[in-house]
Length: 456
View 1 (cartoon, rainbow, N blue to C red):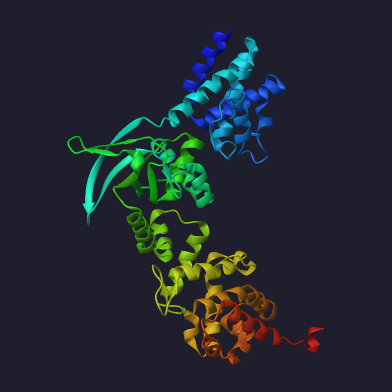
View 2: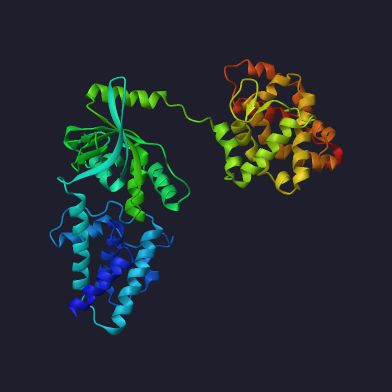
């Protein structure tokens, strides 16, 4: 009977790819639940309310189980994290145990021992400090500094890298110094298969790596030893790759640049150079490119259409005053426009109108303001534009209530008190803010409200 269940478990582990730290952690936890509750198990009771986690699947539980077998090394730091893979693996293994129990008795101690052995194999393979690995690499030298381009599986890289102290556990160092959510986002991006990350990680090889390069075979060899590489750039990407491996079982290859022979001073200078000279892509350009990549959200599609219409419409006060791909002095950028317009496209006046009427409503609103305000330059101030968008819904609703329409003349009547405001004076302040404009606009419009005898 013992041999039968061991053979069945071996076949299950092979066919269902239960070879990673995450999947073995799930199997250990499910076996623990079976020993507590007996068989058959109901998999629906082993999922949290959110449906994204296995109940009580924690690092602490797994280490408690391993400790009974005198194993103190950590199997998985990610046990218990939100993972569709963990829930799916739990369901698979519950089905296996229940099916097997229908025709044979199961010794759950044997089952637990089987998974403990799998855990030990994973830990031993991961913590081997004497194993050498080799990868094809291309050498390059710039200004006296030598480095190599290569690709390395994350399982052969992450455990041997550090971000602050070479004596610190890699996982602890990454968690203490970096943003977990950012790394999680990278891991999910890699798992979902939405694209690739061609940008290389930059490393500095330490003496512990015993790094060697064979010029004839073009092979780079190093030793899998703790503290072999200091990460100079790409820390979050490297951590994201590792989370993807642990949570989803994807041991992806990472493009890396490996420097050799750097002094501490050279490492520090290179770190500063990399992190101060890189220039990010302008946010406005990213929004423009999203259309080409066909990954715009619904709101972004609406805002892009409005942006383009207002920038080209001959009747628009903003014609040729909007900059689509970058920030330009004297124009409103797409980023500022989108941010300002959110209250408009979420307003009741907007939501309850057709697409054609929506554009006309906002155009009428802008034209009314433009006719009232002497200082036309104020319209291209992002803070002013954002402030007037805040009052759009109230103005339109008031115009309809008073005049039964939202024509330019009706809206102009509602906004008429603003004609007396010296916006140029506000603009003379150092970087006038949205709050400064909005306070003046709202207080001016509020003062203009009067109640006549016919209203009561």
